[in-house]
Length: 275
Length: 189
Image (cartoon, rainbow over all chains, first blue to last red):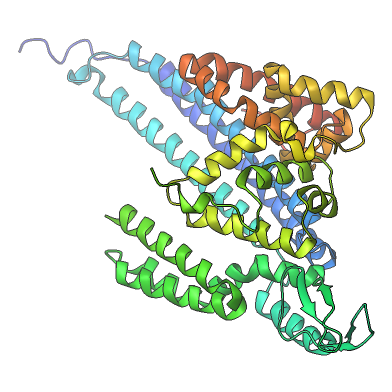
């Protein structure tokens, strides 16, 4: 009656351009994902082998290879972001400006199509980002045999083997290292009272730095219980933290006082952040 | 006003001593040399080393780690280490001086170091190999420039980001060319 249904907006060229742009975007991300999969498939066995073969206690060669690989994945991620910013988003804005008002029925079909295009492209990018995160997580997990408990037990056995094999530098008398020390320590000779310096092996020194990780490994199930609680239960976190620090203190009993102060600090920090 | 008990010396080793020792070990001095410079034996140094780190963990105010950073940056002026320098070439000496006095040079190398890691290299070793600048000297420079760079960002963050992006692009190309390109160079929209 008022001519509202006359002069409907008609732009088949725009519809085709939307279709092609969407298809190009999907093909582009498909190619990146395929390359990502190929990279991870080739890299994971190499990372595991490198970790197992590397005698460096800090596993630096493994770490360098890992950061190189995640660096390449970041390049792919950045490539996708730049393509979205240079091609998809400007296209969306430009297309919107040529369409009639959204509230008019004349352009409704085109606005709907453009909205579906936007959602499809953003969702596809989101899926790509998920694949990137999965790939990075898979690479980070490619660590070979990293059970700290095995390493710790091996060092305990080794220590028991060697603890009676030291001699006083002054009188040659037999020295027994009474417990596992993680840093250079004075040992007094029971025969001539001379002060000797015992320096633990690199592997035992490493145990000190790995003690917390081992304690966390032993109590991971409690942390999981806290993280799965809904809503997050602070009592479960405290239970985890107390158990973790108890395990830590079993491994490095000489650090009990310092660890307790650190425990109190972490508990306080968590209560501040939790509430 | 009572002094913070966490700042008390450990076995006679003050926080300034400890910070400078860490900086000097990063610059190439051995633990033996550092312990000797501080006038203590190895067990004493190693326990103090351990306990200073525990103090930082315990300190919720971050005062200790902040002071550590400041003292780290002035390690070259610490009297106990003034006669002790790692052996470096004259060229390296020039670069070490430059990184502490030329902010742009420091910032460019900081980016180069990070990008090197992204390409599977040991960034700190790359800097040492190219310029003779040890990790310790690099960290000293970082401490010296930290506040100024924060001021620059606050004053003009866009300019800062642009220069960072330019450095990143320069070194990405350099390291990518060295390894035959990036994994997905052939994939374009």
